Structure formats: C-alpha cells, structure tokens
Length: 276
View (cartoon, rainbow, N blue to C red):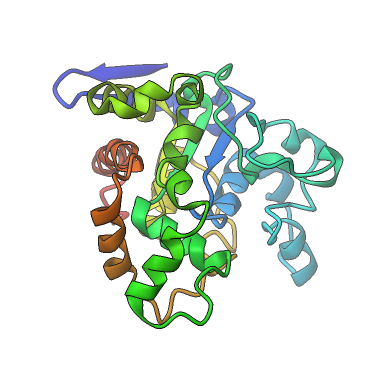
C-alpha cells in the first residue's frame, strides 16, 4: 500500500516495503529501450537474493548471475524467474524457456498493481539519439545536422518520441486521443509514476541504484554499477542533436519524464539524500 501526501502531491511507499520479501509478486520491470540494461543486476539481487547470497564470485559464477547482452541471467533459479512477469512484448523475444524475462522490453501489464512495477526512464531526446547510434543509423555521419537529418528520416523517429509513454501507459494504444491532451496525460502519467515501486533515471544511474538499495534492503551485486551494454556516444553532440529534435517535434515522452523525475527527486529526498 501507499500513503498520499497532499502537500507534495506524491505517494510514499509504506516503510515495510523496504523488505523485498513483502513486495507484491510477481514484479514487472518496464525497461523501455535504451534506458539501462545494467539496472537488471541490482533488480536481480533485490528480488533473488537467495540465488546469490552464498555465491563465491569467481569468473564463472559472476557471468552466470550477471545480465548478458541479451538481457538474460543464465544462473537464475526457477523460483527467481517466477518472481518476474511481463506485459505484451514490444518484440517477441523467442521461446520463453531460453531466457529470463526480467528485462525484456514489454508494455506495462495492467493486471498488476502499480506497487509491483519498477520503471527505468531516460531523458527523451538523449534516448532517441542513443537508439539511433545503437541501431547504426548514424554511421559515417559528419556533424550534428547530418545526424539529425538521418534520424528524422528513420521510421522509428516519431515512434520513439512517445514510446516510453505508450509502454508505461499502454491504455494510450487504445485511446490515442489521450496523447493529444497534455493536461490529462500529465495527470495520468504522474498518478502512475507516483504509485510504482521504484523509478530509476538513466542519467542518474549510480544514484538510482543507491536509491533502490535505500528503499529495498538487499545485498550488493558485484556488477550493479557496471555499464553492461555501453553505447558509443563519443563523437556526437547529444545536446545539440537533442535541441534540433525538440525544434522539430513535440516529445510526448517529456510529460512522463517530468513526472518520473519528480518522483525520483522526491524519493531521493525521503529515502536516500546521501545517494546523489
């Protein structure tokens, strides 16, 4: 359960939620593309501590119990896997027996209580640039203007400007008019982000992991602050390209991001002022 603070307009998790065993399982991590696969290691340690509490962290065991490039944990027990579920897949990931579903991209499962949802969110323009680089759309480009032009020509350009919103608020898929109503969209987005179990921000990665530890006590994962899938952003002026994107289109994801950032800052103040 949660308490609503009328002064801050935020929902504060009950203090007993700091014990991960008291979370409402199964859980879902809404991992929208390019928001941080690396969060998986700390979420795994939080929910599946029994799997790693007696692990001797030699190279083999570390590999088995760390997220890989396919967002998989090969050493996860059956009991651990049952602690995580998903919504409709963004892309079908293949036979379910071959992977651990904690971090695969899926829409929010609306049958779950919001207290079972974990979110990773990223500043929208930065996320779009990171995706274009990851998909190799920006190979051999020279300068921000050419990079922006290449992104704008992509079929993913407009879709990615609102993808975080649609994945976290899947009702917008059936009611697209909600995306054109900023006031109602903000009300809905802030309500959802206020009630979820945890919000992590990609650009505040270390702070977000520290916050997770402060909200839900669990043992450290040796690679919880490692970048498991580094993007090659060097050579690109992400801020400059982002400014061009914002002049060209309305980033619907800005509304959700604003709500998520408010929730994150509130939790840092209340649970973990030492983290940032």
